[in-house]
Length: 532
Image (cartoon, rainbow, N blue to C red; front, side, top):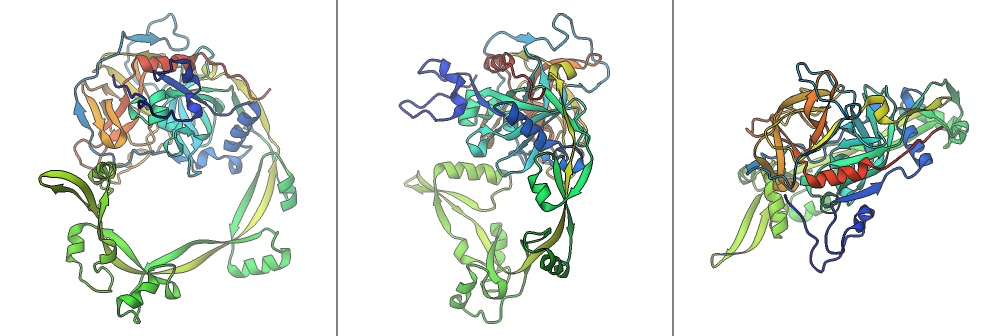
């Protein structure tokens, strides 16, 4: 069992995630941490309305895309010795099975507990992961991957507008939409981004359904004043139509324009460029008439074969210099190079046989490009919608909840569910992410290691699942008849072990006694309703 310790004499990070952990001793890091998501009923109702309104125009669920985190182009994961449990095995029964035994698995029926979690990431994109309902005292608990709840790029703060939709299908919420209230994860994940603790348990409010209503066209002023469901239809128009419309309605009217990404194309070197002195004006800004000189990164062999000139595809000496770097950057770039993310060279600097430093060198060839400004023109039509909202009750009452187990022996059969969606590294797209899929097998007796992802002791399963299945549950002792089992892991990483451009391995953190501590904290927290 790995344990990350606080640095001696170092400062404790100031974050809301540490609040619950302060119940521990002053010198020992706690096992669990929590953070508040939607703090109260009005906040939660606003989150629900953000995702789904009265019709397709106000439904953001259908616009979301799979959250790939750092899972694309994962390097081969190295196998090491087996994992040693930190205590005795334990189980918590699924909802409705507290005093019953599981049936044998014959054919695979998908569990009702499976669904997608939706959220807004740090770049303001609408994203989703896989997840499941799980047993809890108040039947209000969701299990998923830690990276589907906490955003590493924002110092492990929780994702915005986080919801769970069981049975999700093409924008529909058959059992309601459940807004996250409190997120629980391991202290080491929340503070140190330790991917060996890449799991989270989230309490959710009672579900709500939002729908109905008739769309009515209104003026821009009426649209702005309306506080309920509303949407805007946009129609692309020509520059002449925009000019005529804006002259009629003025700058505050429905005719709009904005600059969009310019069209960039490779062009020949300008005739007036004959020396380095005349090249300089093109190195910044858009240069003359939108033409500028840029560098395109290539591998060393392509760079060495390039000529010395000012033409396209010639050496760009000014950008291809040897640069001193730190050991930390050197190690990170080694991992990036193994994944094809870094094309340059890395060298150790030695003096008298001892390593005294590290360098990197990237290789660029010249590209003369021309940027042509582009403008988008459109006209808006405004609509308001009358709809309804109703409380549909607790998550576990509506779809049930999987059991929970920890400190189980390796090499046991598990069934894994999720919504794989992304293509394999070679571009092949085997899944759509529209409906949940399943895979099964015996977990490996080895543990998997990835320095790039701060992983030292994941468990693995042979599978062709692709990103989008992130956060999906690994269920032990799954009953086909009852569609219930015991959550014993969540999908975290995807590996291409034979380097053929196809994912063939998925991994999960090992669920041990510390995982059980985090789960127990979450499983005993009440949430309640957001709408009466």
